[in-house]
Image 1 (tube, rainbow, N blue to C red):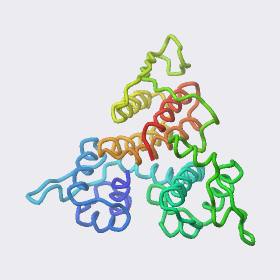
Image 2 (cartoon, helix red, strand yellow):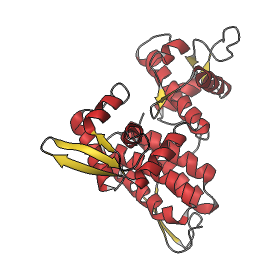
Image 3 (tube, rainbow, N blue to C red):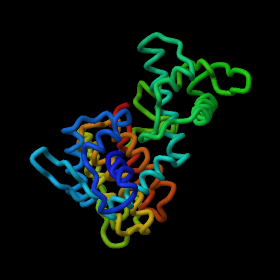
Image 4 (cartoon, rainbow, N blue to C red):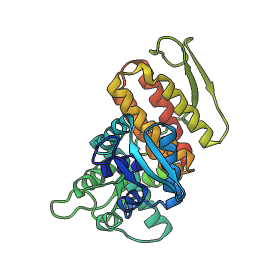
Length: 295
């Protein structure tokens, strides 16, 4: 989705506008770590999904044109990556993981300034000092970190992991998981007829999967979500489709950490925004994958 957004930005939001791959490379430089071959692979995937129209010459896939559906998805993705709720949820987990590496693996005593120096962000949009302050306060209130603030800064300025925070990372969980909850289950769901189904209802086929192939599980969940897109309101369907495309790209490029972020966003969005039982069911399936995807 970052590449699709780059096409949208270079095209100045205009469909049918010629966008050279060379221009995309320059636009993404310093923002997304991707080489030319990988960039062309992503553009080919976008072309296959009719999000862009491509032109391939002797020097490879050298030009794309933004398609209307690609424009809609890029706009939705740009809005979603700025969503305050999604950003603060992901930041809490990312900050805690970083703190674990610094303290437990490197033996350092990091500060909030050290974290901001790493230029953290959510799908390319940098986190702000205020967002980190909120994340620090919530992690402290939740018992995941400890430490004193400074002056008018209520979050720990030099945070330390608590036993609870350390356990969350070592068990590969999220700070948003319910405490001491049983291991999440993965379901493969096929919707038949009315989309408003409940867990274990006769109108759905739900099969517990016990293998450890994260890519296959991820693809199955994404297929189930895509199957239900037509039953969602148009604006919601477009937003969910954007997130699904991002998750698929992460799976295809063997990037479980990026897939984890995408499924976190999907779970949060479907759980908060989708109406009826279907949204909750799909959200639960997306969230159930998160512990399997590592950091």
